[in-house]
Length: 446
Image (cartoon, rainbow, N blue to C red; front, side, top):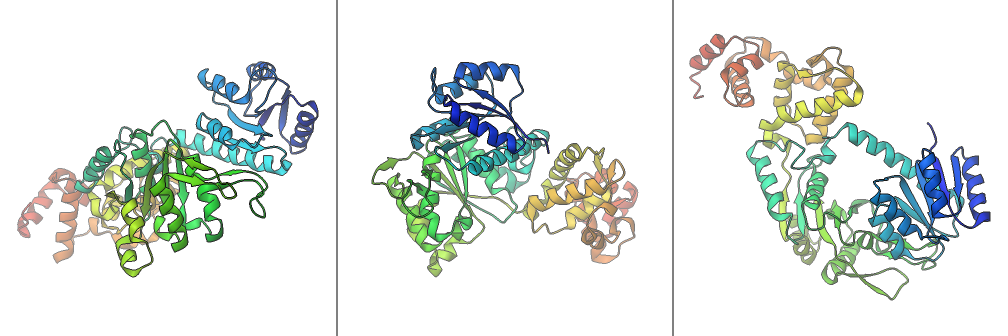
């Protein structure tokens, strides 16, 4: 994989040279500048992927340099270096567009980790531009939210609560797009110009929860080699999304409750209180009411988080939306995989409609992406789907089905076709006349 081109802006000649040699040994292309002005010149003359700039420069400071770049529409990834342990400045830099920061003196390998992280994020951003409407990036104005009653209610609740300061609890099964709902709320809230910080609460070990939530100062405990900003401070002025909040240990719930109640935090090892203005949105696939009754989740925290609740519906509860979502995911997958698959066979749609979708939208998206890769024609065929779909289907749409099974197939097709009998006949693979005869035979009220 091609390594990124780095521009170092640092007025300390020895440090600049040392860092340059280290990065070159790790196969990076490196340009050196010793002032902001010189850096801007090199940036104009070369294709730069990442800028590593000191906070203190002889002409202007790193924050001003970053602001100037962003005001000019330059979105080159920016890493701020500071020897002053000024974490608040670093947080400010990230709010205006810095990708990361590092405190001097630092271990050179730490820079490599940061550069690797930024490179991975850049790849993700490129894929997101290609897949403009992937599940994790849909918003009311650029994603089909569905026409089912459950989908319309979800959209209505988001539009209703987003502009308010209420804390929100999003419930729903895995794969229903709870983080997407949270991002949409953020994008339509008063905090939309702030950052959106997502935290997987289930992945936070009990012994470092305080550091993850509130940060720490250098030397506050073994391993604290630098100041660290916690997620509350990083999300100041924006939205903090607490995913899978039901997985928090009881001790961590206490830490979280205090921060939400007081809107003030202290970094570990510091006596200084920091006020935070953070919109709290949380999500869970657990039954928190049951957890409260069983004593595993604090009732006071539940009520703090649940000033307004939103249900992210399961796909099986909005089957009317399956065709629209399937076509959307097919378009994205075809674009991403450079395939020319533009339609879905009626046999596949019937199989989709019959499937339980325990993995919800995520499962549908993954199934279509896999099938698109395997498909050899312009229309997605049943043979490209996983074997369980082919077993579920059993060619029911191509046979003379008997009894209740045939009734169910007709009703499913009519529901999928939104009552359009011509479309339903097409889905079943029969003539319109045959469909009308079957409707009359079974005395179906449609």
